[in-house]
Image 1 (cartoon, rainbow, N blue to C red):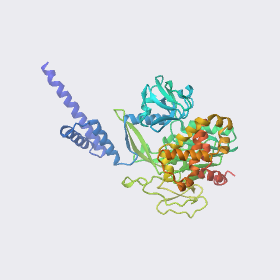
Image 2 (cartoon, one colour):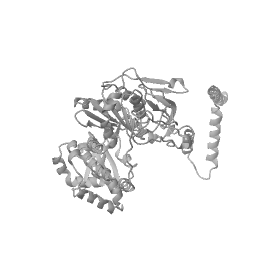
Image 3 (cartoon, rainbow, N blue to C red):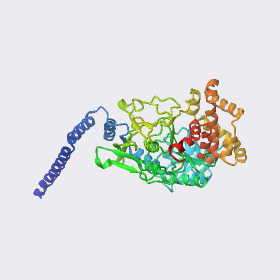
Length: 530
């Protein structure tokens, strides 16, 4: 028994020595003194816990240390908490479990923007404009936008009671909703502009994006689609494999889409087009400074192969690839492991020195056209050639073939948007005129072409704005009138026809889209389709 008493600590000591030796060997192999630095951090953490004036959480300090470490690398190497990771996974896996509504906060009240098609809320008859005033009997007035999903989302099969105030109804209405799996669509609008031009907007590159876009294009092809506008504006990116598969739909088999380089050979890779059924249709892409990462992979490949025309504003400039590593407590780290390059060899990563990631902006003039004007130069960026010999640039995003910026809003409109006045007014108008709109317009294209925001509607909107403390400005109102009326009209269209209706209205006053329609002959010529 006595002998056994001494064997246990000796055994533990030997294990510890083995671990330490293993760490030392690993450290020597890596060329960094990892063990000494881990020891140093452990000493610092222990000293703070023992001596700091207030009690502190070791978890909090460790997370702060991890964030600080990653902040020394690049803006895209990040720490993700357990709760954040759950939400991110839902977004990019293409579904979540809940009641199935898009909402916003208007006057401190949860307001339904639209029930998600096929979800439990739509099935029960919840409508756009409905206001949720209680959740499970507890007032939801004043609830923050971040707290709402915590109350409404939950496991499939569980129930939640929402109490709704509806315009035109005297009493509050209780709905007992059984939560279900709700699809999150990344192709949020797709429809025919006319008899031959299709339009599709991709908002992110999630696990289901390729399948969604394939279905959308197949549906439009059946309707006669022979040309396509692909809208990647404000698309922040996502899965690299999805961007590769989508680019392959338009680029001939065997052509390189993108390749990656890393100091770790296992992370070097290249993606070769598998080909698709849309390699011979005229193509125009819309991009802006919110188009990043996977969006830039698609637009960079399309541009390098002279496959289509790129219109809009310079893209964001993210040429780094991250891998996600799960940690033991359910959190995760995303670490940049490689850089990606377009087929011509462009690294489109924008400088991020000093933390000012948007520091370097290309000095472009509106109307610069790289397709027509080969004299357009930017000596601060390296030059490359497309497969057809056109000059393109690396080091700062993808420069469109035709640069066209949208107008900036005045302070008056910024204030209107900040308090969601467009949504509030449109909901009020819709409640009073829903039947007239339904009976007067059989589809959103007829609504787009024939419905007008009347002077009375404009006056009512101004009065509502004034009642909210927004001082009327005639000059700014006139300057932004198209934006203001289109915003109201698009919400009305969405209430009846969803995102297709809303986008059809928006595109009618979108000058970047108008330029896309105008440049289809150039897209055909560039891609040798005629």
